[in-house]
Amino acid sequence: MPLCLPMIRRLKSPHLFGAIDRLPALGRPVGNKTFEVVNPSTGEVLAELPDMGVEETRAAVDKAYVAQSGWAALTARERSDVLWRWHQLIIDHAGDLAA
Image 1 (cartoon, rainbow, N blue to C red):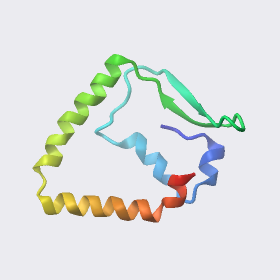
Image 2 (image 1 turned 45 degrees about the vertical axis):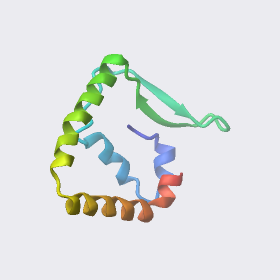
Image 3 (image 1 turned 90 degrees about the horizontal axis):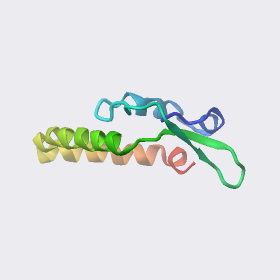
């Protein structure tokens, strides 16, 4: 999910967005079609995202369903640790997430 360069330059931690493309559970959309997210007040392109059709969307849902079994196999303590870590990352990067 590449953000456009002007948007990336504004972020405190731009490296966080590079990791999105490497998430194994998400995989890659089957097609190469994308669409632009545009700031309506400036016309600036903020991001280019996959334009997924029905089959690509179903494949993504199927991958998420399979990944859920790994999550379910964790103990409550392990899931709690993950959620607390996510919470801390959100707090640490609130400025970038709000951009």
